[in-house]
Structures are given as C-alpha cells and as structure tokens.
Image (cartoon, rainbow, N blue to C red; front, side):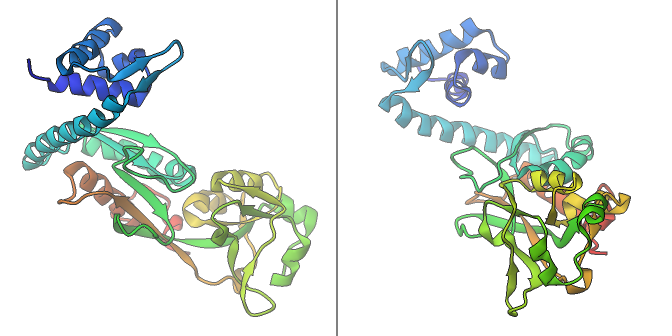
Length: 308
C-alpha cells in the first residue's frame, strides 16, 4: 500500500503544530481522522514516527529522517500546483512572511487588504521576529530585513530605503530642553537597541569626528518599543521614517538636530531561499511591496519614503 500526500501533510502538520488536535484544526479534519491518518502512515512504513507522551509528541530518529523527505515531496507538489496556477497568473497557496514587528505593523499590515484583493488565492501567514531567523528552520518563504545582509546563501531584492532621524516628543523636550549640539545629547536619556549594536551608531558626527555612538539609558530589542517610549516622553530615539511618518506629521514626535543629521537611509530587502526561479506567490508579494514603497501603489504615507 502506497503512502498518500494526505498522510504526508498530516504528519508534517502534526510536527509543525505540536499536537494532533492543532493539526486537525489546521487541516480542517476531526481529531480522530487525523490520528487515524497518522497511524495508517506508520503502519505502511512499519515504523514509529512520533513518540506520544502525556505532555507532547516527539519525533523518533526514523521520524526525523522521514520528515525531510516528506517536506520535500509536499514542497514539490505545491511547486507543481503553483506553476500551473502561475500560467493563469493566479498565485496561490500559503505564503509565510517574517518581519520585525515595526515593519510588520507600519508597512505590511496596511498593505494586506490591497494585496489580498489583488491576489485572493494567496493565504498569508505573518510572523514577527526581532532577530534574524533561519528561513528553512522556520519554514519561512520570504523575510524582510533592514540593513546590510550577511547571509550570502540568500537571494535578495532591494524593495526600498528608509531614512533615519533623531526624534523626541514635545513633552520630553518641554521637560528636559532642546539639544542644540551633538554634545548636548550626553545630558539626555537616550533610547537604544540591545542588538544589533550597529543600531546605536546614530547618523551624527561626534566631537571626535567619528560616528556618534550612544550610551542608552533604556535598551530594547524592538524598534516599536523604542517608538512607544519616545511617544511617552521617556527619551530621545533614532528611528526609521517607515515607522514614524505619521508621528512626525501629527507632531507627536519632532525631529531634533536636523542640521547635524547625516542623510542615512537603511536598505529594506526581501530575502528568500530559492535555487530555481522565484515562486509566483513570493514574486507577487515582493513586487507588491516594492510598488508600495516606491509610491506606485499609494497605500503608505509618502513621508515614510520621500525623505522630506
């Protein structure tokens, strides 16, 4: 008796979700049907793929080895289906997108409605990680990375650039005074990143003629957290235009030291693993994002990208 695609998908889904119940919900099946499918697969293979404990499911060595082959088969079938749909210009299937929470909230989320209207057969799965992830390990199709890329195994496409500015709230400036020189920042509460350390090099020239490295009073791994701290008047932050355009337009955050600030723009790149031609659904998303960031789709505040 031959193994079926449904059995492979059930097995992979149980591994991905961590339980038969969650896999059943994902596959739109009953728990009993999913359990029977998994048992049937193990019976056909004459081996145990998963150990069932009272708390969780664990892959056996045989299960771990078989999972790689199962994923390859599933991906191959999805790719074949995708190629046929691409012939009709209808990208389809699940697209897993990863981006740091500020970019996800301020850029991707506002674009979802328009993207889905154009490509209704693409199922979006949006995940946020503040650090760099392994795309294969997290089963991610495309990730948005800001700044220079270090991983040469990735294919990438530059989709836009966003300018960095030194910002504070009117309430903070009223309470602590307006810095007029770079040296004045030493008297203020500065908001910085725990990682990467390069984000604590602000687009200013210090008194020694070197790039100005701050000593944060408050640290965070998330740019969105630093934005909220700045809005609450907790200190001065250096943030990208894509997440602060509306704050600046409304006056909730104001730029300081503008005459001293270098025109530094962070590259925004879409990265993905593909040894062959880019898949239709990845291409549809990356193209749409690039069009939005260039202004060809008027879906985002212009101030986020014009550098004005």
